[in-house]
Image (tube, rainbow, N blue to C red):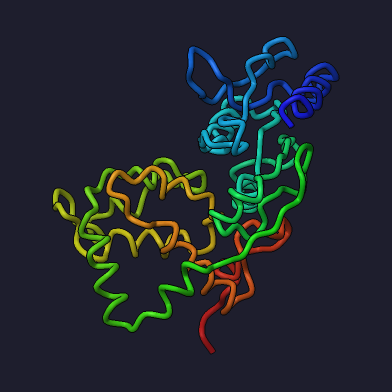
Length: 265
């Protein structure tokens, strides 16, 4: 899989179709984001842990937005899996990236990983390497929904009270780009209070991410308090899908229903 991606990217660089390729590099025993500018530098390219095809996770799209703002006339390639590509589609829709200035280079997640993530689409449309896999969905959401209201309330109260308000979930999120963050608005979230007011902090963010979250799971991985944030956002996404038939980034040409609603009649 890695060699297939290397050859594809090397061709894009040689043909000057991209100014650089944003991917992952393994150097000095560590994996980190890297902008590859020529075929020779691809020797260090990696997907992270080769057994799971992508154990090292970084919000590459977030870095791509920064690159694109600094070099608006350049075209960049970027490594994507299914959730990353959904993120790209969302960022195109929200005018944070220009579609004709981005060339996604996609690889599929292995069945074991897609099953663990309960991913709706664990492969990108721009598939360069790997096989299309499927997975079961929303088993954890269904398990939580099966509990009575009191038990669900107690569970989430116990989770939210663990929050240390580090903003790690926001900072790692590839779909967070607002210059003014609602989580820093004192009218919504009081400053200096720990634990945070339950459940205001996380429900404020969940509402804000309702039509943005692409189920990458980075917030869940970043949380130092092990709050199951992915479960929260999967439930939010389920409501969006059930009530509005919308899943963020699944259809690149679909607009969010939240941006189309008019006044109540």
